[in-house]
Image (tube, rainbow, N blue to C red; front, side, top):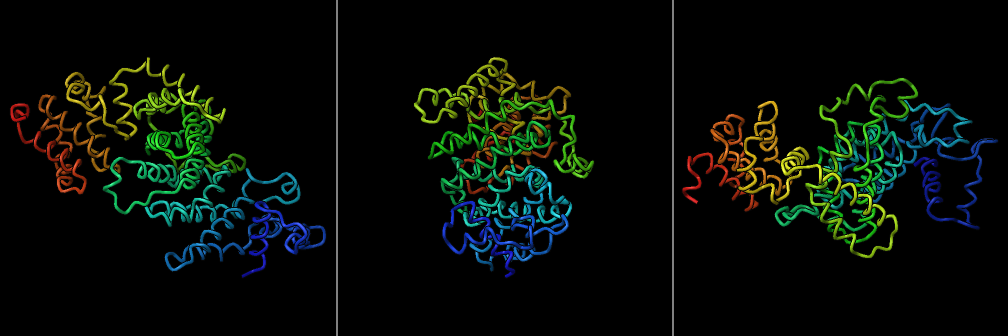
Length: 444
């Protein structure tokens, strides 16, 4: 392969380990041209534009199953560092003063690399996860890459990996391979860095709220096998709990676009209808059971002062928010987040007391519609709880049977009667029975 590839490998390795008194170390002072030291910019950019030496690395990635995993992992990491060198947020002062990098030459290959990463994250295999976690951990340090990754649904893919491995129903997901402690740490690290964009992006906040990231992080805190994983997950939760929407007046575009007046990203990302900020995330955390978990954790001894500080801040915010919320507020927040958890909000007593509120402010039964959509959730616990809640609506709301059928609930739930998970099977069967029987309590 081209010698620049080997030079790049050395440049990357030199950040990890020194090569004193070796032939490798002499390469650092090698001059490409008189007065031009070797670097990412001088090797892979010419007149401020990315040259084609990166293309062989991308071809290695697209070999698929016929490719060598080690080569693909290394190629992805090398390509990430080449492309990040052309991102404005990563430009070094000494290099930017000498060469003006045109981000337009980097944007398309960076998008291609991130698309490959998200395609690997869609797989449940541990091999696919190990291919991308080193590269993703490097890319999320770049602001432009963070925006691209979140636009490609990356927050949801990471949340699903964390959630699937922690789910209580994992015994029914035979094809899911539990990640290693290091992979859990790297994924939570990526989520943590992505939370720093919440302050300036309503779309990224919407992705965290919509894709179940809160539930994944809370589950990670409760089950993580190492303190370092707990620390990063708590830091991510703290960032979400304290984020605001005060900077949303700025266009939601890549940092380079702010400087070049480009509106491509803002036009492709619709503004969320509902305002989402730290109070929304706190409601999601309370629904996911974080408050009780934090109370228990504060009684333990922790060696990391940052972790203790995160616990203190979260504890204060959660208790303050909880005092201002009713049980119905908690239920609305839980359904909106799509992260349903068994508890007092999913009981006959709760629905009997709050059934009229299911109509919604506009009388459009919006929560019922959301529950019907959650029946097809990939999280098996969520699907089972959604079936139960719909069944309780049918029982307690006047003419609830006909309303649920009109919204298509019966056809969707009928498909789950033969589900592999016995809990989903039972809840779906009971829900259909409640739709068919006029006086359900008489046959219990």
